Length: 80
Image (cartoon, rainbow, N blue to C red; front, side, top):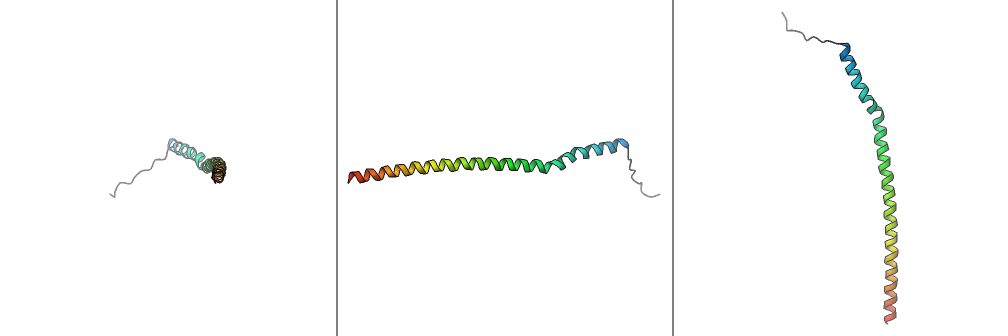
């Protein structure tokens, strides 16, 4: 006698469980990339909005510093 052979039992219940498992992940496979891209674009949009706010704040700071510089120059010229 030879070595015992492994028996493979394929049941309807097993096939249904495997199909349900595949169906659960099929939704993720088909829509996963879309979800990732949507999230990436949302983050990109938020980054662009934040950059706009930062640029405006820097513009205000530059104007303020320029006005201070003009006032200092006038004060120095009036002291002479």
